[in-house]
Amino acid sequence: MILNESAAKYTGMKNVVGETIKWNDKAYTVIGVVKDVIMDSPYRPAMSTIFTYNPGWSGIITIKIAPQTGVSRALSRIEEIYRKHDPGAPFDYKFSSEEYARKFASEVRVGKLATFFACLAIFISCLGLFGLASFVAEQRIKEIGVRKVLGASVFNLWGLLSKDFVGLVIISFCISVPIAYYLMNNWLSRYEYHSDLSWWIFASAGIGALIVTLATVSYQAISAALMNPVKSLKTE
Image 1 (cartoon, rainbow, N blue to C red):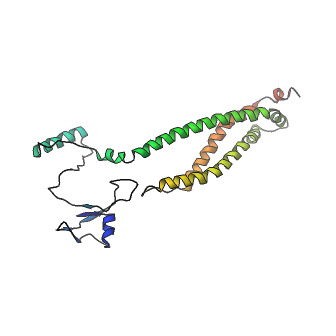
Image 2 (image 1 turned 90 degrees about the vertical axis):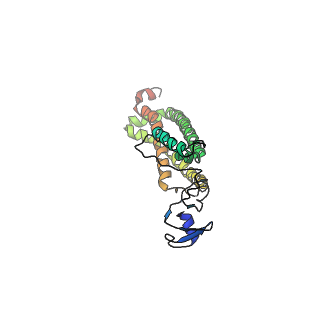
Image 3 (image 1 turned 180 degrees about the vertical axis):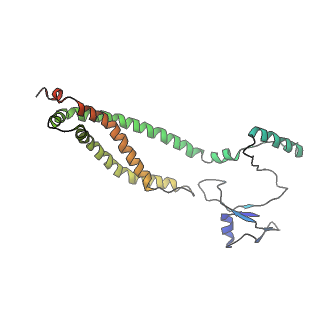
């Protein structure tokens, strides 16, 4: 008999390997302990499981195909042997990787939808930022011309127009991080086995938002900074 970690813990023994366990009026010797595997719902902890060999229990047979062997070739060979020993039963097969993936199909679907709508939200936000940067640059065009005449460099003017947007990004980051952490933590807590939310995830998101903002605003900011001040001040 082989036990998984949950079953070994359930016995209360420190070292269950080599012990004898009686089940269905038959004595079994524990020959090993394997790690817990999610075989049912990913939302619940792994169940205590025992693995035994009984030649009479042959409703389902699990076979590992050698990597160097083609799937179609292996299936035809398996079916040939199966028909030889049980010609009356239908030969039906499933791939364990596909069956396991179905358990997380809804999560994969949610992930794809979240990615799509996140990209759409970023695109719309960039359009709004671009328009707002154009408006701000137009409103301050004479100020930019005066500063450039007085010796301000392109970098100084770029920083002047970008700092307001950077401040807005920092404020939004401080507001969104606690909300995102709370929602993500509640979502992950539904799973018995899940990753932890590290600080670098939120830091990288903040840095990415800052880079996208600066990249969007910089075009208008640099264009305004490179403009000939004569054109912006000619009406004065």
